[in-house]
Each structure stands twice: as structure tokens, then as C-alpha cells.
Image 1 (tube, rainbow, N blue to C red):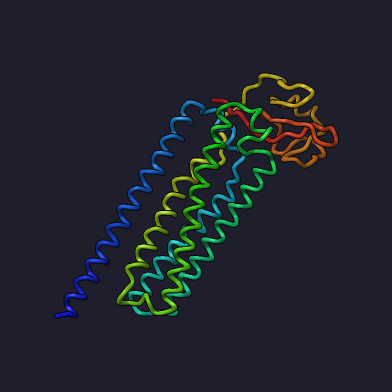
Image 2 (cartoon, rainbow, N blue to C red):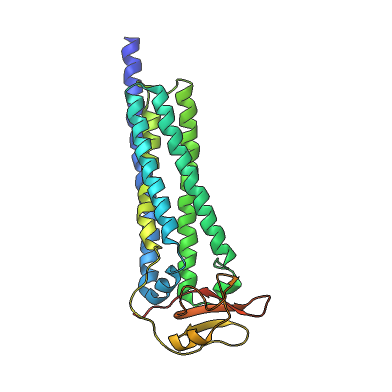
Length: 275
């Protein structure tokens, strides 16, 4: 009788734990949903500026991080399945791979952020303050949304590390794996959020570019370089490094410039596409 009562309590705890996790996931979806809605509103109001600022996002790095998180989700699912089959060693291997992939995502994202900071593209910077409201809003949302996601990934890695310890000590096995399942649900949530975040800040180009002429002064500002101007603009630096010919990518669109220590105008490329 006592064993039966214990089984009932354990089943109730498992069901309650899963219900609590689903409620938590729902609240997280609502939270990020509000951020997605905010992004949509400001992108509608500042479409050209958002397209311009998006040119500074690294598609290759974003694609790599997406592949990393999707692969981590696969190994997370495999670790739960291995636990259910009682294959402890395999569970530890799959879960360890998931943790390593999560850490890899954070490291790569950190380098991407550092690159943006190096180029002066962060809230409150001199470079960003000289741009329009749309570009400022784009980068503000970028840092808030990807930063919050990064915090969730960090928490997920910490939780999965705890799960690994519990598996190693035998506190999670094929008869008691609800905690690992809940951790897996959280990790899949982190991956799904990133799948929606990634396209929002994906670097892309549309249409042509308006030719409005030179719009700068001797101290820097926004330049628009047509093909004619690009040919004459033979001393510049791109992303802070002195170039030999012209800025790379090609000098088309609005380009923010500042004065380097060598006195040359150094553009941080921010294209404004034709819409």
C-alpha cells in the first residue's frame, strides 16, 4: 500500500512538473512575442533604415549559430531517448555534446557582438548617435533581443550541466527522467526562439540605391556615394581598417564616416536601399 501511494505521489509530481514547465514556456512565448511585435511595428515605420542597418549583420555567422543550435536540439532529444532506454553512458555523451554546442553558440555570438562594438555600432556610441532613429532602434532591438536570448542559452547550459551531474550520480535514470525531459523542453524553446530571431536581423539587400549626392562635411557624417563618387574616393577604410582603393563592400548607399588617426575618412558601411 505504501509503495502504491509513493508511486501515485511520484506520478503526480511528474505531471505537475510538466504542467509547470509548459506554463513557463507559454509565458516565455508571450514575452518574446511582445518583442517580435515591437520589432514589427518599428520595422514598418522605419523600413529603409532597418534594411540599411541590417547590412551590418553577418549572415554566415548567423547561419552557423543556427546550425549549432539545431544540432544541439537533436542531441538533446537523443539524450532523453537514451535515458528512457537506460543507456546512461550514451546519455552522458549526448548531453555533453549539447552543452558544448550551447557554449559554442555563446562564444560565437560574443565575438559577433565584440565586432559590432569595435565598429562603434552599439547603443550610446558616437557612430550610432549620428545615424537616424531607425538605425538606432534597429541596433537597440538587436542587442535587447539577442542579449535576452543569450541569457536564456546561458541558463539552459547551466541547467543541462546540472542534469549531467544528476545523471552521473544516478539521480536521473530510466525510471526517473522527468527533470531531464523538462530541461529538454526548455532547450527546444531556446532553439525555436532563435529560429524566429535569426531572420529578423538577417543581412539582405533590396532594389537599387538613391543617388542624392554627397552629404557630409570635414568632420564626418553620412555620405552617399554614387558610382562616380566611388571612383574618386580612393583613400578610405572599411570597418575601421585603412583600405587601398575604396571601401569594401562597393561604395554605394549611405556610408557613415569618421576621421581616423591618419586623417582619412573611415566608413562604417550602412546602406540605405531604394524602397
